Image (cartoon, rainbow, N blue to C red):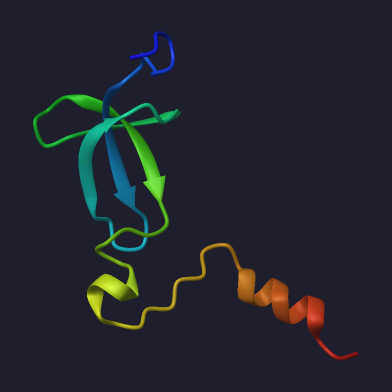
Length: 82
């Protein structure tokens, strides 16, 4: 394998789905500024997600309206007839 192409800062990170509060732990190199206390009592870096497999309509089979960034309002305002 080639030397120096893989990141060296792998660590355990908590990912949190902001639409339904679902959280899971995995190893990642993602940069985070927040931390959270996990079920085991240790504190880990926290990365917030807008959608995961627990909230995505394809996996849940439900139509959910998630507009965290206000994209629809921006679209309507931009293309509204004057």
